[in-house]
Image 1 (spheres, rainbow, N blue to C red):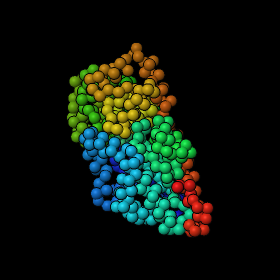
Image 2: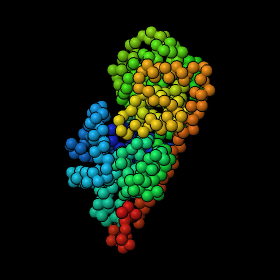
Image 3: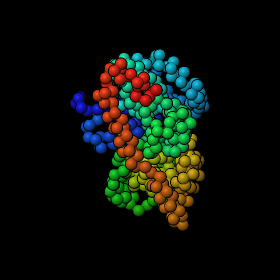
Image 4: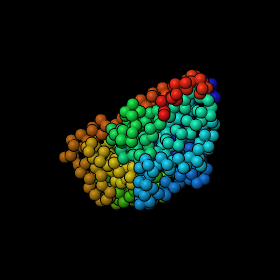
Length: 409
Ligand code: UDP
């Protein structure tokens, strides 16, 4: 490792696809902006650096969200600070030294969390580590909130240097949890830089993706896992639109659904293109006119940047619930879970007589998108990483005569 190169450690966990996608967006933007000045590491701290049973958390999450009641219970039971702070304290007794060993291993100049359960324990472990190493102040710590609206209280820890939030709604939640206005920074959700780049024209993209050049195209997505009633929705769209629109279905990691859709003949004569997990979802969004998706924050933010009217067809309980009024109140889409009614709405949106209102909705969507947010966040992260200068590494007793360590108390 180059001695001058600074290390930014991004802590994520694969609970849903969104945390990983945000971490990758930050890494890509940082590399694009600063080349190899910073070494950006993305680490699943729970899976790679905690012992059993803590390291099974990503798998437990997948199980819990599929059982709504259990997830609601788990989610709400640790909402109050008077519960989650002692809870994290107890957990620290089991996993604290493992996390400390991980920090020794990576020796970061900045730690960034893109996960709701990674603030409190790690801030404490970093403070203790600074004392142990005789450092004047702990390694800077930033949270990048990757939920759009209704985010869990554990996202907000008063000990962080900065907390980047995607919406005013989240900023208000942060203030309510006692963070200072100067700690909270509002830019938007970090979305992969590719979404802010110019793409070939729609006709060219449609040709590349196997779509028809001049038929309205509906993109159907169910998050990274291909969740929701995707098959029934294509059936209804085919029956209702009778080939007046084409459908692109992104099945994500849902291989069974992909096989089923590819084997089907469509009675209504619709052109249906199905694919598995794609790395070029930005191209699919640019090639289509509208999107049907569950209320995942990443997909919503990407669809806004792409200027797509959004039909939400479901949501993960709790953290995605607030995304529905966000889409509705901003006039960029609708919410409907019944596949037959979804097809009705699509027919309405795409009807010739409604073209003007549909375009206005697309325009509002694009105006709400924040493609530059990722770069603004990365600029501030770079400043934080640089702030752990040589003076911060002096022995604690030489620097702590004023009492406080680095403003994180
Ligand atoms: N995604 C992708 N390829 C796919 C399906 C999904 O890149 O085939 C991305 C999508 O663009 C988004 C993320 O996976 O960035 C899903 O995040 P979201 O917050 O919408 O939902 P989650 O999967 O976290 O519930």
